[in-house]
Length: 317
Image (cartoon, rainbow, N blue to C red; front, side, top):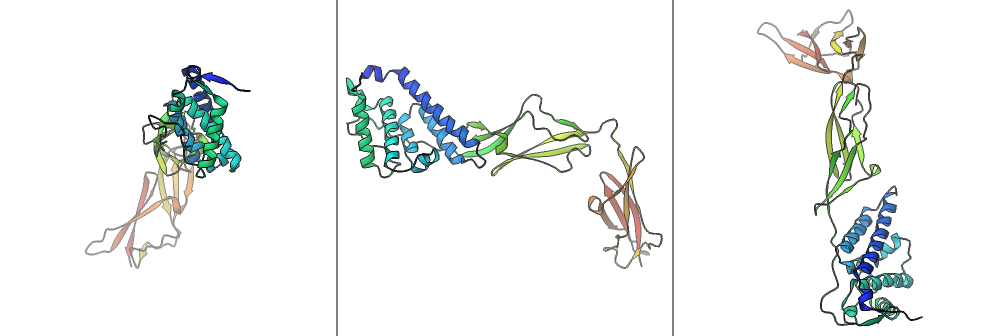
């Protein structure tokens, strides 16, 4: 069956818009499917996004180098052989016809089937390199080849929606609800990232004590941080002081004041509810300061923990 459509109908803006939107919808579906994978191919996603931008900006022909590549067709499940070339050529021919190239612009009536068949034949015979545009057999007044520019990822940015939790009570865990992470491109555009594609890191001690906690968001090589506040509740016991104890026979003297043996020392924290808790050596800090005089060699040992401290003196033997 021969179908003939005149130039005015075939190049009607409504028809071109419908096919352009269909192509965009298809490419968007490929992006969504790729993002659902555990190890998404973001280069493939970027190619699809660039193709969508080209279509919406009117450069429909520029999509051909993308859809005709071996890697692209393999990604959407089409084996790379002469059949796949025919598939790419059909799409390419449709794109070029809709784009209103000079061959259509010069015609009064065009047989669609014949034109598509010719484009397929030209494409298969002349493009072993599948990144090449099919050659035009008709004279043209302007080039139909447009390069699709790849956008470059520049950074990520964090946005906080209404309801995002900036203050926590002691004992509460971090809540990411209302947190939006966007990937920024060098052309000024941005894309919201899915939660599974980036990592949120908070301190293991988050929410255990009052103060400010830093939360870090990382995506690939990019990283941004922000702070939230931890508040005490009325029932939260507060640290009031610390003290150190030694065995009864411990002698507060040392041969070397810079290397005082504190292995027998035990440090305790005292809280506002009257309870005490022994502090692990890894959790407190020790500072030794030389306070010697002309007549006596001695050092001041200071133990610190979460803003509280206690001190004692050790003499040189």
